[in-house]
Amino acid sequence: MALLCWAVVLLAGVVCSSAALGTQTSVEQYPSIAQVDNRAGLLWLQYCKASVLTSYHVLSTAQCFSGVNYSDSNRRIRAGTSYRGTGGLVRGVNRVYIHPDFGNLDNDADIAVVRLQEALVFGDSIKQALILGQGIYLPTGLGLTLVSWGTTTEGGNIGNNNLYELNLYTIKDEDCLLAYYYLQDYANKTITENMFCTGLLSSKGRDLDSRDVGAPLFYSGVTMGIVSFGVSYGEDKYPVVAAAISSYSNWIVETATY
Image 1 (cartoon, helix red, strand yellow):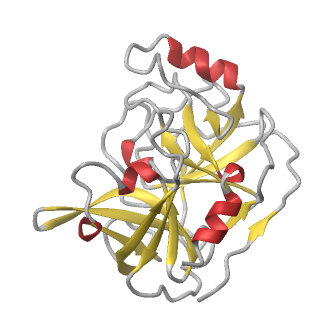
Image 2: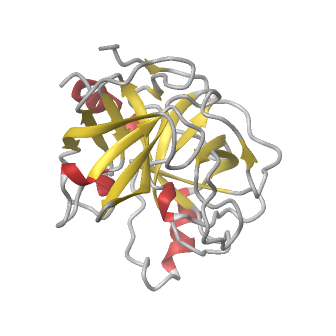
């Protein structure tokens, strides 16, 4: 089993532009990304996203691996492919470790480490994620890259089968809270210090595809956060909220040794 590494990076610079529709990319450019599939009867449907931590572990959100009807046998991981639902290596779930604080305050601590039944084989299309070190917080205006198979058009409801990347940037927590305050279904949502909010430069928001949950946000190749929640069909008005890796780095590294 490969050892998990975390990175300390210098956080500097602000993006000057943002591609609203995203750009097609490949898993070779982002070899730590993986898909989470959900069993629906006889079918497997791509459900969330994950990041490769070790040959036996991936990182995702707690919400993707919990709930009253959750079963390990109804989830699997697909790594090493640029295409939704095909190719790469598929591995079953052996055990899920949910962060102990998840469920205490809305989506706070929306983090899970998943142990696989069989090891992944590292190569050009499957590699370990670098994660941000504990206690390093992101400045407002930092340019990040979201990588996922979600929709790339505003208000869209059909996901892309190809892997895409999208430039976003971090926004003020106050702006994020204000945006959600006026939404009836989200008015009581709490934005904690263990989260950060991202959006497009033009609107400070980003239309959410629910299948983007768990998708990594990168800065200089280092995973800064994973998508936790947002507003579907939000017409790019509402920020996407991510679980901040730096709040949980020590827990992630320790848990990925089990």
